[in-house]
Length: 182
Ligand code: GRF
Image (tube, rainbow, N blue to C red; front, side):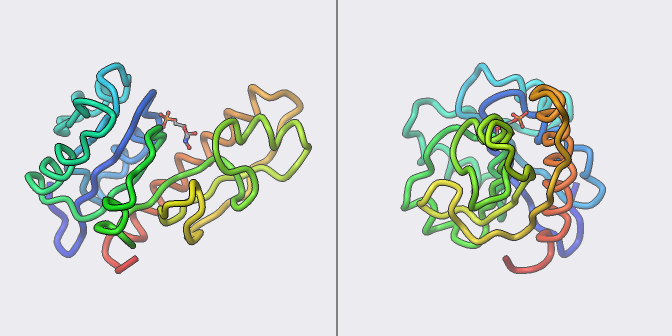
């Protein structure tokens, strides 16, 4: 599928791929041309295959050359990190500067890194999700979209609310940054 004037996105995953699914559901608004997985075990790979989207699986931890080749092969011009659990090297970030986004389950700059929902929940802090540009500092780039999420009395349903909110925000971000320069 090619939407005139739109960009072609690659989605980078490492696990379940529920954010990938949310993006795949938005394909009438933007084009997903490739899924990159850091591991052959990611369930998200099945979601991509079912949707007919090509998948590139990293051959090892530092297979960034392989990724670059796949991105070029599929004419990708935007990257969304969606639960991608590898550090992206500086040289890759420089090349993709302004064209690589990440979704994170907290109101950044609060609670960067892992276990963000648990930590915010334990602190009784405000909960939410953010989409931001990716820079070398983990979860540290310019915040592009952010939304507060309601909390529940237990962690499990709070996590559910945050993830649903994440799925909405990631789709909104891809649609919004599909035609404009980031
Ligand atoms: C998401 O909460 C993402 O923000 C975080 O890891 C989770 C990945 O979930 N970094 P999924 O693979 O998209 O289901």
